[in-house]
Length: 290
Picture 1 (tube, rainbow, N blue to C red):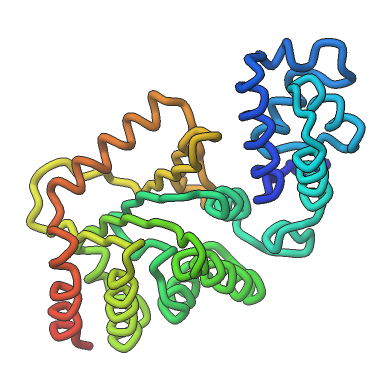
Picture 2: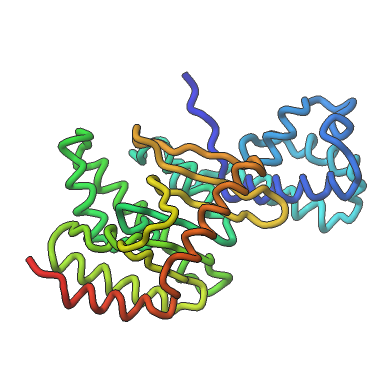
């Protein structure tokens, strides 16, 4: 069976451009492909980064229909199409990334802002390498993961965090962590103290906000983790939720995005203010004992 197509950052970027140009031209998917050698479904998949348009000739015909005559603009899009055929680091055939992680990384790579919650663990985008390693080691005998699988997934988790600290337009990240998740000792005292310190350093950045939901909270509390990924104006916001099978579920329907947004807003309203997080983490570090 052929592997399922995975969106890449370059394909998603090209798809964003094509979708915007089609809308500017006032065309539906059906109108855009009429008389051209591909279907509505193929164009829709191209706009979401799931499929290549394959040839420059096909892309040129589409741009003519959209009224794009500026040769510099055409060449820019053709170059992006050529780059889109190359593989991103998470799509290498030999990798051992856990189910659903490749799609999450691809979506995160083009996200402008992410809102997230976890009731049990420190979120992956905040984890230190030692915490991530200890967590995978805990799961290893249950899930029967190989050492190679664990090593690759820990490395991938660390690489996912790079957008948070890049100089050019860093990813905006707003997380709510349930207090028991921070008190759940993973890997021992030193690992947890290092983890608290790492979160404190991240929240000092303008693009990172972390709030703690006290364990004495008696209001609304989702029993599962989730992320809301805002991909900009050209693509719909996407919800990601981990499943019990170690994979991820995704949805971009406005109804679901609205539902999870209300969840997150309720958590934010009940959590401690962001400015209290460093002191809270310092207190946890002092209280942490073997």
